[in-house]
Length: 572
Image (cartoon, rainbow, N blue to C red):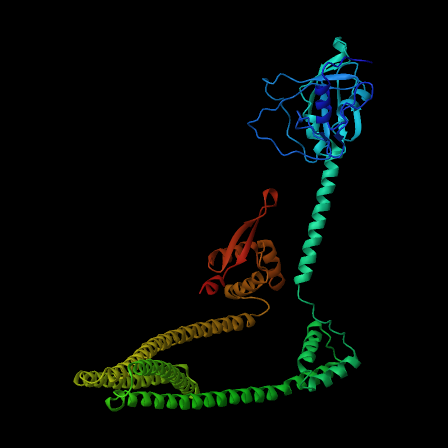
């Protein structure tokens, strides 16, 4: 079939836009400079941005730029673009992993070769399912080729140069939902999920700490070796872990109970060693504290000597002989030394305060514990009061010292600024100590109030416990009396009281109740003269002891008697 081609440049542009080398109808190339790797020709601007060469994907165009569609010429057909003023053709939502498109509006004389010729330029085609009517389904090899096929939606197709109605049609391309596409997409998603889980597992395994060594199973040989390890101080921790695992597994039985007992006894023998090590470490810590305190006191004494040197140099006898620069340096050095001395002095005072607080805590802990909780609470309250009084006396003494220092500072105002600074620093130290004592006094007062509240609460709890014990004793006595009365009942009851006791006992062992016939049958074994009317009258006269209930549904409705004599005791 031959067809005229008036404009070879338009044909070349269309072929280039489809990613095909421009070839004429006779099979000769129209453009010798075509690069198949790029899928585009130099010198010809692509007119179809949605159908570039398969080797590259162009950058997305702006929505403001109108999309221009050109005429596409093929070997056996021609594709004419739709009216640009018409709205774009409607499409359904894209299914996940869609590789199949629906193509409608095909000419009646169209065949699979024509469909392959038109849509094979978009990408590789796996299958074509053509219907007897004017539509078909095309399944591509890749997902991105579906977008290229959708670009042809709206084009008018004409076979050759024929104007017959059977040789023309308007293409409608839309997404199609295929089970094969969905299955492949789900498989791909599951593969990605497996890879993600594998990657996370590798990350978790990389950051997970190593597992502890496995615990050996129990045997006589392992038990003997474990006993030796428990006695060894260096291997005690590991051996105790194995022993604990064996005990939790339930490896103990009558045959090896002696072995486990000996191992537990060996573990208990390490308590003395651990306590001695603890006391030794505490002793070393105390010695280190004493050594540090002694060294700090020596350093502080040397700082005091250096400060005295600077104070002696600041007196007029020696101060006048120094130059101005020397005086400036001496003054700066003196201030630095005083700051360092004050810092070390505060540190030493803090250590002493901590020791005093520890000593007071030790005194409170060493006080003998009384057997009675009220006496112990009273003794603690008295100790807190005494400590409160001592702290108050110390606070008054610090206040007096502060007032004396203030008076001396007021009298000696003409003295040099250096002496004033020394007094002010001492005053600040005393004020800080005073504030610390005040805080400690407030804390002791709060502790005193808390102990008094606890003492009152304990006394109230004791009274409540005494009342509960008395109630329990009374209830126990009542139960014993009731039991004694029930035991004294003879085999054949002669009075209504004895019958009441027997019925109460019988119903007490039947928590769901019993019918009047069942009760009478039991009593008639003891006394044949008892009838139903007397028993029912006796139960009706004692509503606090016996209660009648209706059980069952419909024809199985039945009256049952229950014993309710103990419900009052349970409520109390």
